[in-house]
Image (cartoon, rainbow over all chains, first blue to last red; front, side, top):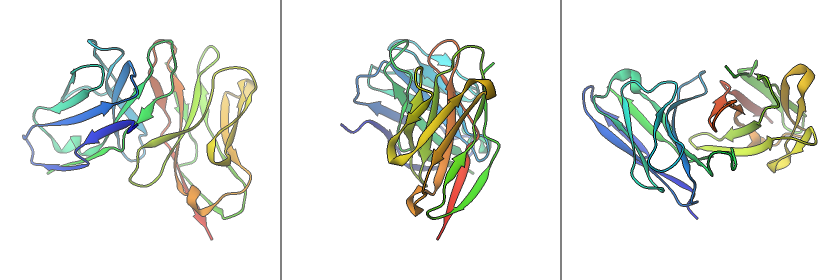
Length: 114
Length: 113
């Protein structure tokens, strides 16, 4: 099992450009999450999907959109990148509501917006 | 709202010394608590978790943590630190409703030889 995979690993964007971060999990998990990690701030939840077909905003959703393409895949889109979105982005998954709460993380995408 | 505080931003210990990383949480009921480790350039890996039962939980890599309700704490310990333990450590608590987690700001552990 690969667990949670993310592409790309690194990305540099210019202000105003758009891009989509891809995430897939092969653990048959129901719930998936997108976080951003900034120094001294821990992980902050951007969006999550409790189950296939549902998505909800987290703490810092502004400037982002998500798509739960199917049970395996959960993508994060930046429509018009801003320097404030320079960060490390992590995707995670968990078995699902009321089943098991531990989350499994991907390796991250390091995004720089200039 | 639930919150997690990790009071130490950086900690330096000598190889072979004992380690304790502090974590305090705010939560009304019995919390679901986690410790994760992040090696440089990597994702987060679960070290251990507490849901209920024995308040001393064992994890991977020789780590353990003790849940103390009276102190709202869930401190991570290791009796003898190895150089490979140098990493950032995150404490997390499950939100009261749903299955989202709230993370602390992290503690960076440096191990000196």
